[in-house]
Length: 409
Image (cartoon, rainbow, N blue to C red; front, side, top):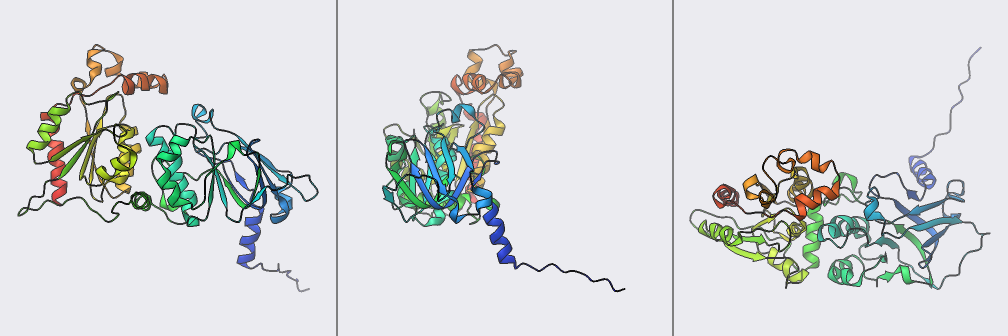
């Protein structure tokens, strides 16, 4: 007897993809760094109650009916200190039979809800926690998207206003103070993020890179996106410009004048400037964009490398305290992805002000891991807040010469 084989009806790939997409929940809460919701359909947002309601009619009822999530739209979810100041949003589905608030305002453009709380007051975190993730999430909309900001800070928004205006053509809504119901057809809650102060093109659907981001930021600030660091030639010696990023509080150079004089003796034109000190954000960005080398101690001021021209050089001074990994992750690797060159200078015990506070046989010098094991607060208090740097200019000279050598290539 011949055996009859029953064949399954094949499903076209396009239909299969569509079916899989419909079955996906609107919120992804499994990413280690951020919770992220992408909602399509009938969406109603009441800001004062931090509530986002959406209809299941435009999505697969089986998978979205009666679902709800609690989401804090800030991409540092494992950090309880950062997240403690972030407003939590309730995201709930409703059916056509459920009572739902009436729309006071209906919008045709998509919306993105995100927070400017957490650590975003710090210039580095403003970029790594908000501005870079916002670029990743919103740039593909070509300004046809509206920002709904929770924990909104007007000073902060004004500082980075030029970036917001180049990502969205619509007015920002301070969503926490909205008693009206705003209705949209698409809402994203949260921001995409890859890693510290960096973008992984393999994780971006659009293939965005850090170079794309720096070009965007330069363009937004009316800076030349195609400018390149000076190239020193034997028959012609243009004077390279070195920016020394000054600090007036912790991790400051205690012998700036010596460093400046050493650099000048090697042929640099030296500019000393402190971000935010008598110079606004745009003005400092313009200064950075004209420099070939940036020199500074590890800290938020180095975030301004986003404005350096292509092939410029970052020289990061690494303080004591086992901070090599943080220095490399926060600025070293991102600099390379911005098409910059990177040098670092690790200070000796004699170049740290800690030598005036602790004996040389203290764990601060001999066993920094025992300090860092006590937690972030212990590390910050000793190695970041209490430490200044007195550069040994003769020991530092080869690093400045290496930068000149790179500018000749």
